[in-house]
Amino acid sequence: MLCDTTGGDLVWQDARCRVIVADEPDYPGFVRVVWQAHVAESSDLTVADRQHLLAVVDQVERVTRAVMTPDKINLAALGNVVPHLHWHVIPRFRDDAHFPAPIWAESVRTVAPEVQQARRSAALHLPARLHDSLQSELH
Image 1 (tube, rainbow, N blue to C red):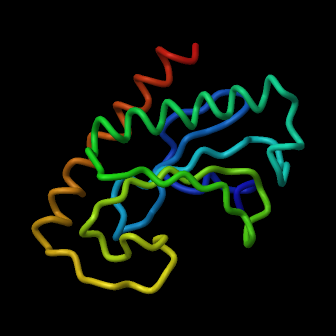
Image 2: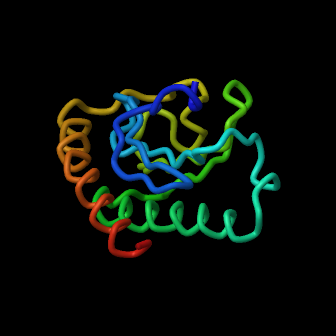
Image 3: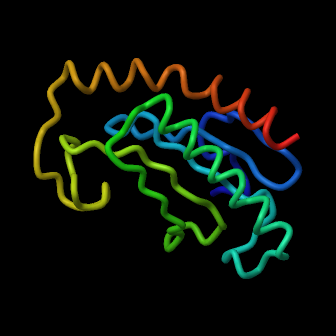
């Protein structure tokens, strides 16, 4: 899946990785950082490549925090279904549908529509901010 397709709305990329906004309607601001080459684990990377990947993840986290103002950011490098190295950067809020459990757990509440809309509106600014920040910080 992540080898053959972008995996979401492409925000930024370089020769080693790409940043995409995931199609997760209940979680606006959900971003993935995907390693371009097909490797399953970060230990498959050279030290320099691993440092680059983590620098991208760190910058995505910083920008996501600034734009979305979440209560917490979840970082996850899960890939059980898609064994292609990628990181999830997920803004979390105390009142989101799954908090404090992972977003893949059973939902424990419904988010008020006006709150969800406000988060979707904030997330509209995320792609441009990510692109500009990554361009300036990593090039």
